[in-house]
Amino acid sequence: QVQFVESGGGLVQDGGSLRLSCAASGITVRLNAIGWYRQAPGKMREVVAIISSGGSTNYAESVKGRFTISRNSAKNTVYLEMNSLKPEDTAVYYCNAPRSVGEFTGNWGQGTQVTVSS
Image (cartoon, rainbow, N blue to C red):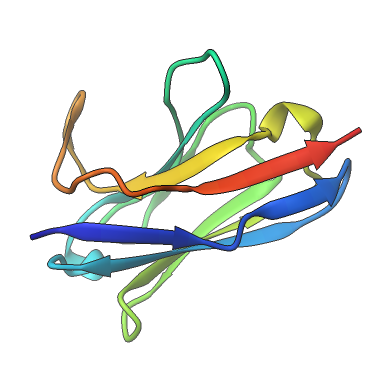
């Protein structure tokens, strides 16, 4: 069974930084595209960043230049480095393996809460 465990969230001030971790089991991150997603209160879940099996990365326009997705194959973990955080980045952050539009390989975990205060 494919599972993801997110961690590293917290409360930071506007302009602060956080590093999120996504520990995967039942799937090899270096062989699959893995994405970070977020859901703010009252809003739909949206994609934040994706790293492909080949290592290429894509980011939502709202986080380009501020967030960096990476992976550690030995730890089977994907990271999201978040800098210059803004209050609008406040959300629960999740990771998963996208299979096609709207379809994902794993179950959604509990996510990790990121709160940015102004």
